Amino acid sequence: MYHFQRIRDLREDADLKQKEIAAILGIDQRVYSNYEMGKREIPVHLLIILADYYDTTIDYLVGRTDNK
Image (tube, rainbow, N blue to C red; front, side, top):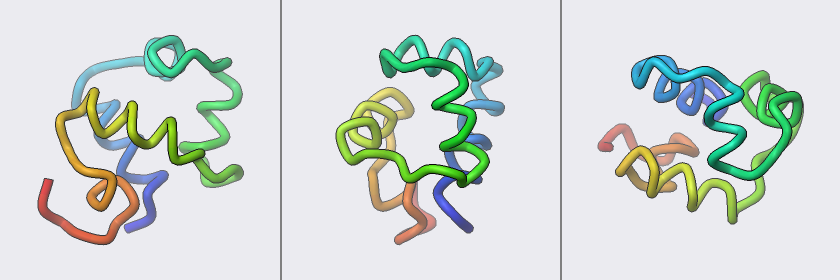
């Protein structure tokens, strides 16, 4: 599973909109949408924020492990 699928699934599981996660990350919703669609790579500093927010690891977000 690619990391963009994981971040979308985590967001949807939390019943959040892209706009809400983009605000947490301090970015525009369109930029975040490109991350979820796999059109742009997510910078490491944003992966760290997402991992902390979802209480998971960067390895899980990028698909290196299936253990949250």
